[in-house]
Amino acid sequence: MTAVRTGAVRTRGPARGVLARYPVLVALVIAALFMVLPFLVVAVNAVKSPAEYAENGPLSLPRGLYLDGIEDFWDRVDFGRKLVNSVLISGSVAVGAAVLSVLNAYAIGIGRIRGRTWVLAFFVLANMLPQEALVYPVYYLSKQAGLYDTRLSVIIVFTVIQAAFGTYLLASVLGRFPREIIEAARIDGANKWQVLWRIVVPVSRPTIGVLLVFFFIWTWNEFLLPLVMLISNDNQTVSVALGVLQGQRLMDATMTNAAALLGVLPAIVFFLVFQRTLTRGIAVGAVK
Amino acid sequence: MTVTVERGGRVVRKQHGSAPRPRRPRDSYLPFLLPGVLAFLAVVAVPFLMNTGVSFTDWQGVGAPKWSGLANYRELMDDAEFWASFRHSLFMVVAMAAIPTVLGLVLAAALFDFIGRHFGGRVASVLRACFYLPQVLPIAVAGIVWSWILAPDNGSLNELLKAVGLGSWQQDWLGDPDLALYSVMGVMVWVQLGFPLVVFMAGLQRVDPQLHEAAELDGAGWWRRFWHVTLPQIRPEIYVVLLWCTIAALKVFGAVYVLTKGGPGGATDVPSYFSFTTFFEKTQVGYGAAISTVLTVIILVLALAGLRFQTRAEDAEEGVRT
Image (tube, rainbow over all chains, first blue to last red):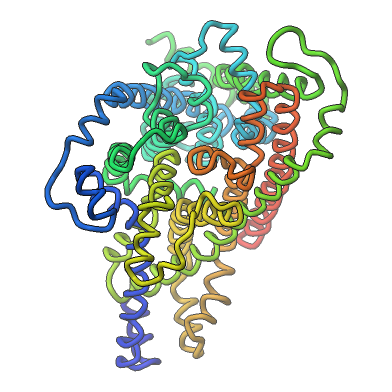
């Protein structure tokens, strides 16, 4: 890094470097502000009273904290319940899909079973299928099985769909797993289960962690299948509840903002908690 | 426990005894694949085949489907709504793959080589976080935020235009059939930008700084180095991003549902939304299945071509390395 910097200074001269630096920084900061601006506008307006909003419009700063709008909205849509549903569904899917991915990837990446390229291609294609091509049969079959409008149905479907991506990612990571370690364990008498749970899983913990976070957030954000499968108010997720409300166009401006803020907050919490995992994980996923 | 250990030991010893027999132990990993394969058959393969089958029938969702051969597909060919929805898909590919990739490249290079180098990695990662934030937001919530900002009366964008004296530029952003598609595209750029940016920034970390240094000493300016050094180095990331984003663009549903419901007058209808309404509002299940089958075929062809391309590029790269 230092070498690069001195190189730059030598060829360009310090004055030009400094002059060019700030406009670029300013341009990027403005661009970044533009990305965050919608969040700020929502936060500002969610704490305004309807009267204040009507009087001053969306651009003024709030005079004080008016939280009744948020509370009203929370009670009206039973937001606590939606949060519980979302956490339950996303959490179960994350764990279930991670387990399924580990099992698949162990057979493909370390077991190197015959025809593994085809098996892997099958999982990748399954992951790329548009959900529109599954949604009606899933809806129909779950009705037949008595699982329609249950959280379990959504958990099952997403566990499988997310595991497709997990298998793809983990199989390539495990394909490069140092074989000596496995050989050594086998010589010491460990069977395949023991190798998996005592060696492969602990060593791949960082990748599995990334998968858990991704699965959780992706499932949290899913829209089409939960929209179709979860019709009763008691089972809906945050995304579906907010999307349906918006679609009905029944909300006034302050209520919309309360809804948006309550929808944004969990996402921001995940983002802050998992920032590092997310950005590292995308890199892992993209390169292989 | 001892039993397993002994058994394991014996297996290993046996392997050593008859060395050239790698087949059997390989295939005994199959049980680990069993739950995954069964689950896939039940949740993905069977529904997918059912959907494809239904696309050759006339079915309202109740009673027995009536075989109609290719009638649904023939009808699709003459359906203006269908063609319009795919035309809008191309606009989505521009908004979700082309524009974010180009912008993401420039922003990633600027953040990585410029901000990171002159102002420290901290500033660069805070800025990166700002760009990435929309990606973690549920699309339904992003839709609520933007439909309120773009609202014709009292929407923030129109209010802002009025405040800076551009009142004549005010529009019904999502309600005007000529504008709605472009407004949705704008929102999708905002949603999607963070993904390429983050992938490209990670890719740039692989690039050997000496290459840049050498180019810089040879007198190449920033743009020339970006074009001749950075771009070729992160080509694998660019392919992956383009493929993933194109597929995401073809699948886009939630944003359209929440922002415009395909309207006004079908101006923002896309294949996934079109098939959704055909399934669940018009309950023409056979016809909806045909729409989604066409969409699936397009996506699978793209995905296969992309994966082939990627593995070939990887093989070529590995060939160079060894």
